[in-house]
Image (cartoon, rainbow over all chains, first blue to last red; front, side, top):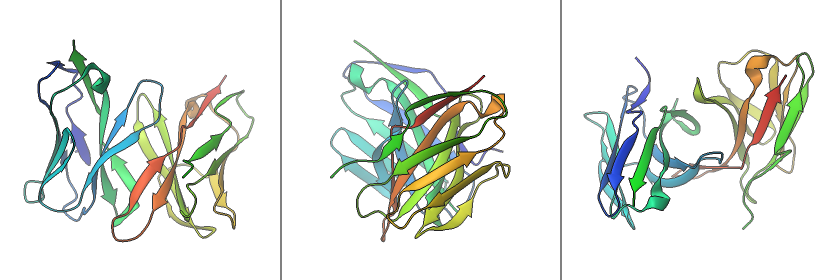
Length: 112
Length: 113
């Protein structure tokens, strides 16, 4: 079983819709959870991090964490074509956020 | 505040050669992590340095090594290059404290022929 699993997609949503990206992890000791966005040919860009159960909102992005279910998600409201990218879920390893385990990423396409 | 810088951005080498990649973290960040990204394996952790000491190491062969200098700049070295070492090598600058966070540099794209 992979340590961090994401639906590889591709996921397509129409412009203005809500995009929902999901991630599960296997290490119950994980404390830090991150979402990175990666455009083709570019490096990952941090868009959200969450440490506590519940929701965390930042602009059009909402991260949701459920440690009991070992589940973290990212919602993108009012999706724009510029949101089209691969979204990587990352979880800290061995108690340190300096060593992250990444999922394989979900490719999102927002259709104009 | 300047971001993470990595040099060179692109590199072509042949099998058997060695390569050194450089990374300068965000000013004030003392920890640097390195990752390898390939289409097949995704993003994988190589190692992490803090105050010139390697603190964590991923599951890579000994051909992959690194170091960190007193100004927090870091280098990674790959000796005896293999075709499978072709990848995007990413350096992450680590913000410490209660809520540690990693910020990635632009990466070095290495092609081994």
